[in-house]
Length: 81
Image 1 (cartoon, rainbow, N blue to C red):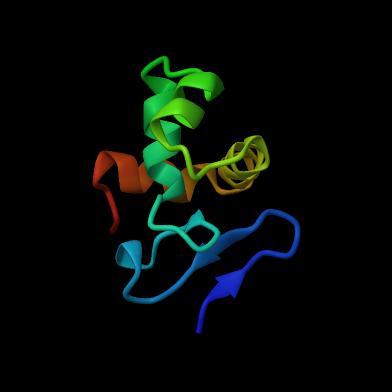
Image 2 (cartoon, rainbow, N blue to C red; image 1 turned 120 degrees about the horizontal axis):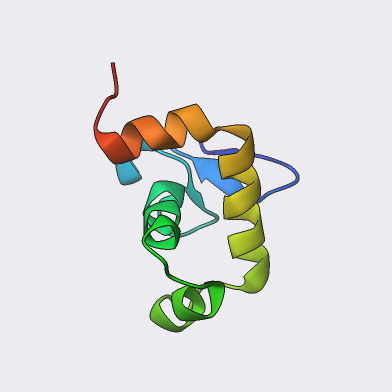
């Protein structure tokens, strides 16, 4: 069963996106958005490239990252031990 955080609309579902945190009802992992942002993508660019996302989705992704930075950074670097 999917786990959705009440305040952020971030879900973790076994078997979907490797069980990693993702944007509500999508297959867009938080780590992907964070990775693009670190590479210089603006919110506007991300919204253009992912038309199903809303500004609220991005706010939720950034809030999740702020609270779970070690988890997301490990996924991005491939250090999942």
